[in-house]
Each structure stands twice: as structure tokens, then as C-alpha cells.
Length: 117
Image 1: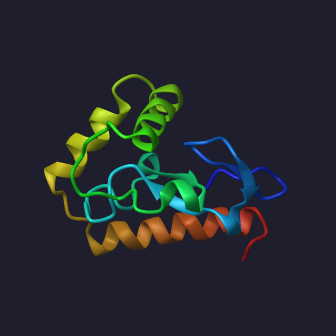
Image 2: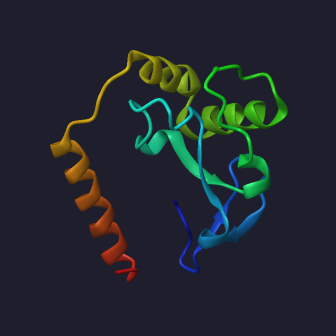
């Protein structure tokens, strides 16, 4: 979740800082879109208040939180990032079991590297 050495993350939509255990994994495209559910570009630290009720299946970047998330993605990943995530989400790609196992291994390695396992 892109924490600093003390385990502090910054909410992608309001900028508040908190320990990683106290925030949500905020998905830009709802988790119901399996193609982007585990895509690291789609998941960022988000305070519980901003993430509550956010995951609408309809992609409409017009509410305040969505606008801030959209601006964050553009600033962090470059112009077109929100549109690329949207296109990837609606393409409907299905993750293979092998890909998911590789993702778990990658995450476990990162956790071990940071002394979390």
C-alpha cells in the first residue's frame, strides 16, 4: 500500500496520513471488475470515510471523491491513467490461477522484505 518505513500511508483522495492498518485498499474501479481487482495501479490507500460507498459499478468520475481520485491517478501515473484502468476493467479479462499465485508470491516477498512476515 506504499507505506513509509513507519507504516504510514496517505489517503489518495483527501491526503490524510494514517497507519496502513487503519485505512482501506481503495479501488478506483470497483472490485466487481475482476480484470482490475488486483491491479496495483487500481488500488491505493484510502481513508475509510472516503472509501465508504465509493465502489459504484458505473464508471462516472463526477462526484467529489471520484474527481480527487481521478486527479490523483493522473498526477501519480500520468495522463490517461483513469481511462486506461476503465478500459482494462470493462474488457473483462479473467485472472488465471497461475497469475494469482504469482501475485501472492510477489506480495509475500514484499512483506518479508519489510519484515511483515
